[in-house]
Length: 334
Ligand SMILES: C[S@@+](CC[C@H](N)C(=O)[O-])C[C@H]1O[C@@H](n2cnc3c(N)ncnc32)[C@H](O)[C@@H]1O
Image (cartoon, rainbow, N blue to C red; front, side, top):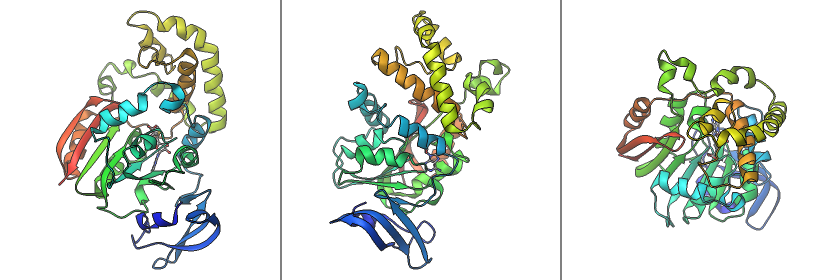
């Protein structure tokens, strides 16, 4: 981290200022390793591999750490050759391309494909993730002067409340133990008038009705996979996709039904959704098949619930609708 980024951090407990304790490695403005101290709470926090860490690597999100280390670049536009992350970031947020002078908070960055987009606006981007995916993000975005990457949990953010002009949280809420609490944390970090963009998986209406057999197949398989050690499960997912891929390619070409059938077979098939090469389609399939089966939590929501969260979070100009990732929403803090 850069020394001049200290001003963006606060003690996760008392929200007071943090100070540099010892700096064991670093040069000039850059701190590679050392500690951050809270004089009031008498606690210190490690800076390791350039990243301030407020949680340990061993937590329920360890599988995400593995996922984004193995696929540190898979979903980056510059790697996969399609403008997928750029299009989604600007469509989903509806924010301007130039936000120089603003501060932005990203919750749950994963590999950092959206950190890259956020940083391209010129805003100061503070990007947090609970898992060691932060190291992958650092590899891609850490050298940018307007990016600060932190390993922390949304439930105990080492940041000041009512501080940010923009907050976004994509692909995360359903993967936390208490999605409503996670959501309600987000507006607290916005200034009055600040803008929030977030999304959540959509609960299939059949989940609640008699047609429960139409629940996406992953929910049948997950009880058997979510406890499997991530390394082992990743190998199994990779082997499954390698084995099934020739068949998935044939099935995927069946008009109308093919794509749906592949997802029923728990194959993350983006053929026809994204304009990717065959090689990339397979790489995305391995990544997202693991992403479906490994998370400790996967709690989809209804659109009514998500809308209510925005209202109860003190947001106005609410726009919640079906979209990226299932349900997407935007709002402005009163
Ligand atoms: C599916 S990934 C999405 C990553 C990225 N936003 C994207 O869409 O490419 C979900 C991320 O949420 C993170 N996450 C889960 N629980 C979290 C928590 N309590 N605090 C912060 N991040 C969390 C995981 O570590 C993981 O990287």
